Every structure is written in structure tokens, then in C-alpha cells.
Length: 156
Image (cartoon, rainbow, N blue to C red; front, top):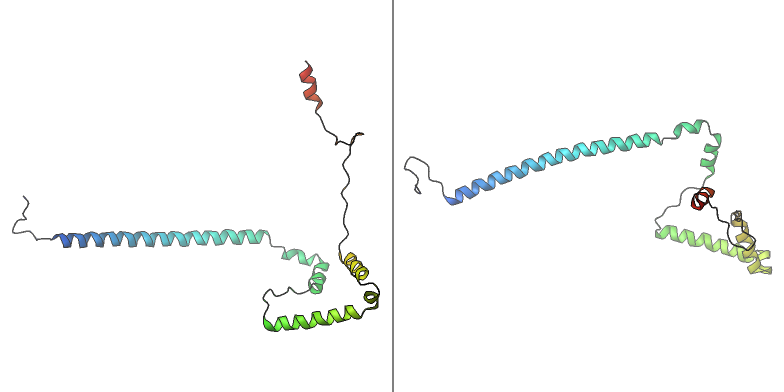
């Protein structure tokens, strides 16, 4: 029983191990390829949904009806570059230095430096909108809104 018959092939333990490894690697390869295909399909679906969302927010057609839009777009300052390299830094230092010299030479600044800075800041700040104050009772506490339906049902 334990020995193989003379007519059958003799397979050693190492051959069996090798066959099992081959089977395992083929299974792994098959699953990896199937997962890759599923992943590609999922990516295509995501791209399609993103494109649909972008189409929903497409406001380019409104530009025809808004003539101010083109004027605002031209007058708007270009977006500043976020990367600062040596050349840009030197240029910035020169322009800011010139601006500082102009401020120092201005007669209003020479007469009252702190007052002129305060006035400049006031002119640059947007106007503050005050919120309407909430109503208060005669004793100063905030007014409470009570439902009358609850009070009537409690008395009965």
C-alpha cells in the first residue's frame, strides 16, 4: 500500500512541493489580473462621474449674458506665483524699498506718521456691517419665546 507499483511513475516529495508552488503561483497570478481589470473598470466609472459633475457646474454659457464678467476678468490682478525664487525676491525687495521711500518722503507721513498710517488702514478696510441688536426685556434679560399650547395642556 505505501509503496508505488512498478508501472506507475515515482514522484518524490520535492516534486509534489514544486507542483503545489506552481499551482499557488498560477492562482495568485489569476487573482491579480482579475483585480487589475476590476480596478480599471472602477477608475473609468469614477472618471465618468467626475465629468458629469463638472458638466453640471459648467457656467461658461452665462458669460454671454454677463458683459461685466469680461471687464472684471481683464481688470483683475494676475494671481501671484506662490514659489519665491532668488530673482523674484530681489525684485520684490527693490519695489518694496521704493514704496517705503515714497511713504517716508510723503508730507502727510512726515507731519503725523501714526495718524497717516491709521488713516491709510481705515481707508483700506471694508466697511463693517453692524448686526441688529436683539430685543431685551425691561430688566435686561433676553426675551424667551414660550409656546402657549404647552402651558394650556399642563393646567388641565
